[in-house]
Image 1 (cartoon, each protein chain N blue to C red):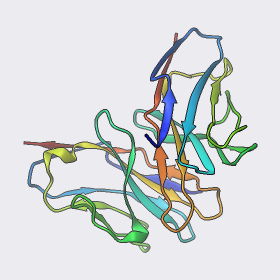
Image 2 (image 1 turned 60 degrees about the vertical axis):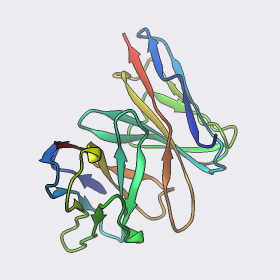
Image 3 (image 1 turned 120 degrees about the horizontal axis):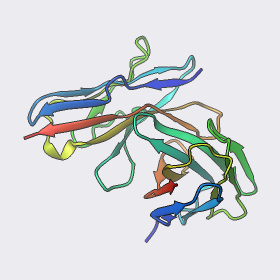
Image 4 (image 1 turned 180 degrees about the horizontal axis):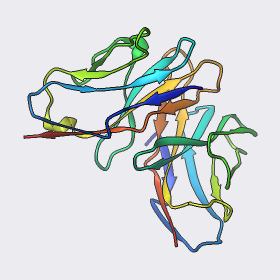
Amino acid sequence: AQRVTQPEKLLSVFKGAPVELKCNYSYSGSPELFWYVQYSRQRLQLLLRHISRESIKGFTADLNKGETSFHLKKPFAQEEDSAMYYCALKAPNQGGKLIFGQGTELSVKP
Amino acid sequence: DGGITQSPKYLFRKEGQNVTLSCEQNLNHDAMYWYRQDPGQGLRLIYYSQIVNDFQKGDIAEGYSVSREKKESFPLTVTSAQKNPTAFYLCASSSSGALYEQYFGPGTRLTVT
């Protein structure tokens, strides 16, 4: 079964510290993976997608097929990074369905 | 102003009543989705529609119904059969092509007492 797991409900770091939000998936084929972010009082929005291999707001995420992981990283956290982060998997030929993880709340303290 | 709109923002209903949540998009997207967001459970897919007049059940469709009579609109009805309807409901629509993305509405918070 396809599944996305984010093991941390809450991650609290100080400003300037590195941050890593963990995401593991179970899927036997070639998934598309995404990170979505929800800032306070804002809509859920796409942060980055693995196929673009991009860095957005200083965040990067590398797909590791061997470990079935797609962890989100940023070397120096900022207070404005505080938000809810969701990892999501899109399986091919399933009508664009996204399977979301449980979410990790990132709190960056001054 | 383009995008996805959901109304109302807050909705209160008595137990035993059906209630319909509105979702409209002007992005010209074929596919639309309804999710339920509960603390600690992430987003769970209720129903989705890839094209007008067609829709499929998601992972937690019991107690919900949808229609897709127009491309722009995908209303969700929460019926009295839904055992735990109090939740935050999110609607989304998606683009097609290589750079796939789901665009989300602002959500409707439904409280049933």
